Amino acid sequence: MQDFINDTLIAETLARAENPDRERVREIIEKSKELKGLSPHEVAVLLQTEDKDLIAEILGTARTVKREIYGNRLVLFAPLYISNYCSNNCLYCGFRVDNKELERRALTMEEIADEVRTLEREGHKRLLMLCGENHKRSSLEYFIEAIETAYATTTEHGGEIRRINVEIAPQSVEDFRRLKAAKIGTYVLFQETYHHATYKEMHPSGPKADFLWRLTAQDRAMQGGIDDVGIGALFGLYDYKYEVLGMIYHALHLDSTYGVGPHTISVPRLEPAFNAPAAITPPHPVSDDDFKKLVAVIRLAVPYTGMILSTREPAALRSEIFDLGISQISAGSRTNPGGYKQGDSDAFRAAQFNLGDTRTLDEVIYDITTHGHIPSFCTACYRLGRVGEDFMDMAKPGLIQKFCRTNAILTFKEYLKDYASEQTRVAGEDLIERLLKETSDKKTKRMIESRLKKIEEGQHDLYI
Ligand code: SAM
Ligand code: SF4
Image (cartoon, rainbow, N blue to C red; front, side, top):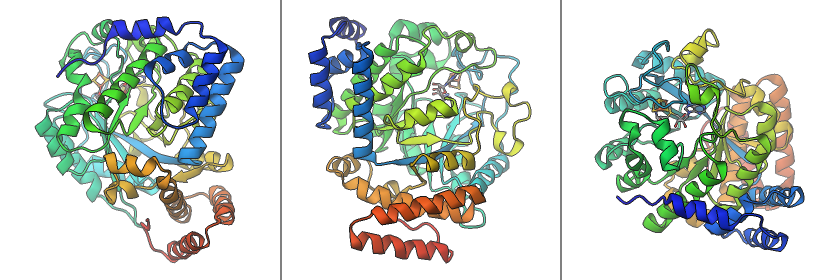
């Protein structure tokens, strides 16, 4: 496969867009309101905008676009780290092979089931399963067995995992087929940096040193039958403007080759990690203001691509960024294998990186509910086959909103009934009541009410 990331082209695109004039920036902001996306050059112009008033307009438009396409829903998930054995040496990661002080652990299937039970008892329905890259202690066979274990582990109140997204090292087409057969949702992989020289410097050894093998992982995943893929860059390794353009070129490549772009874009920022030099002193730190700008620009550039924000970011900043275009968030996370059952004790010595938001799922839900977001545990699209191109075909005319809003309300109700604290339950019931009042279509309103009643009577997993 060809390398579709051209460093010179990206650098030139950014150079040409420097000091943009106000009219040009406003024209691009106007164009973004048509929800048809932006070209790499237009994205570069927005990224190069430093004028405070214009940046405020970019953020304001991103808020509007987010509301228009995604409404005020936030889909929740938990990462599940099953093994921290890794033969790569990524200079920013606590799991890197040269970190001899890390407490290494590959969970047994019983331990994985324990983690899953803990997450289910908090109310989680969606997981992102991860591990290091090591053919002995984090092999694909082991990983697939872990997926099967997690799907098979159930608890009281209809506790079950309904979707497992996966973030593991790049695979061959054949091995992606095996992951597909294990019923994974989205395959997520971060390129870390799209800048070749920085990539080489940050990944000195191990299979991950091969830039092209990683860059083309999503291609092989799609060729192996996986409908939804996610991309991302690790912000802080290189110039953030360059990385955003790298992701835009990646999205364009997938769109033009497979007729559908990435399902999600993740925007992780470097966090301190145990014995990881590049995480302790990030080479290109991204300020909070630049971070907000880049999230807003991505929202305008690829309006129909979901955007994921993890618990790497602190709580207060997360709240601000949600409105700028985020559609999925993690909550109550641990990055050390076994961390959910074990709690906080000595997590740092086994964790991949430090967390910025350490609140529980219930605390996060209370917070977002009181800020007017609808927490959602919906997994309907993937289970009904509304994935890949079909999902995009429905998302674009806004149809998805209709399903998503209803499913968000139903899955939120299930959470409130089975898992919420009293404070969250009261705030949540209040929100659902308001949402019902705002539902103008009488038939939809009746349908939601009758399903809410069924959930109240003890039914689970209702969706449309
Ligand atoms: N080992 C696989 C890989 O590298 O793709 C699986 C995913 S790895 C467990 C998850 C992601 O965590 C990496 O892709 C990287 O972007 C991110 N990560 C690693 N160290 C980090 C740090 N110090 N701060 C924030 N994110 C980090
Ligand atoms: Fe291993 Fe992934 Fe960490 Fe790199 S980022 S050391 S590949 S776990």
